[in-house]
Length: 92
Image 1: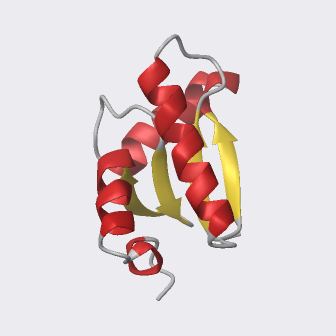
Image 2 (image 1 turned 135 degrees about the horizontal axis):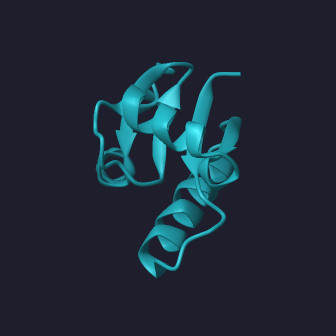
């Protein structure tokens, strides 16, 4: 599909919930299609996210274009501020 967003539906962290919601809202506002991958559904998906990102402690949201790692929330947020979201997502 292209852009993949690793997220979780099960978290006690308000920060994670807020960050995930913001990423989804911004992607939708820019009409960027993305696939949601819920790591809470399967521990193997969490391990996959961490392996692909190169960070054994990575927490959602983590963003990829196919299997290419784009970054986490902070990097996405910086791209939004700099108006370089398409470049960040490797779409441009």
